Length: 217
Image (cartoon, rainbow, N blue to C red; front, side, top):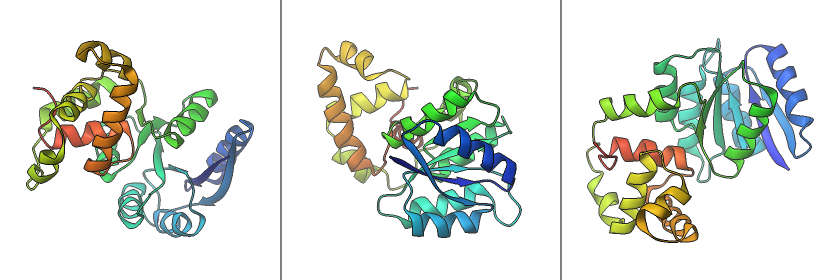
């Protein structure tokens, strides 16, 4: 079972998400919170696999809570930011805080369930309506972080190639075809690269690539 924590200041939204997710059969809602500080406490105590996190909440916003949760746990839960606001700054803020995914509240129920399942398996996602804009804007804004050379030097040339192609938006199968290797080999190299970088999913790997100058021009 995938353990999910719901964080939203509107009880009706939490109730609706609970019904949708628990009807899936393989998802259990283990707790609910109404603000950022509650999310941090519940995440520490309940150890969910995925947190569905609202952005704007009285008493503590979701981005600050996401940042604290991701930093505090050795193996943090995946955070799916769920918001009504299709605004670049919320998307960038969520990803830079360490969220594994971003989805809009008006998404279809099946898409919400799929998003939770993807994050639980270590696959990040951004709502399809904002994906291309996010990647394009990351490319425009990117500014390599100081001190990133040490981590980058630990990656093999093949791992760097794979991370770069992932940042271009290629799937494992497409990367394999581009590099003339097996898909399973791509998965293995990517897994080792993610461990060295210190990220838990593909989306945060792309964020890291853009922030550290690995992504293509």
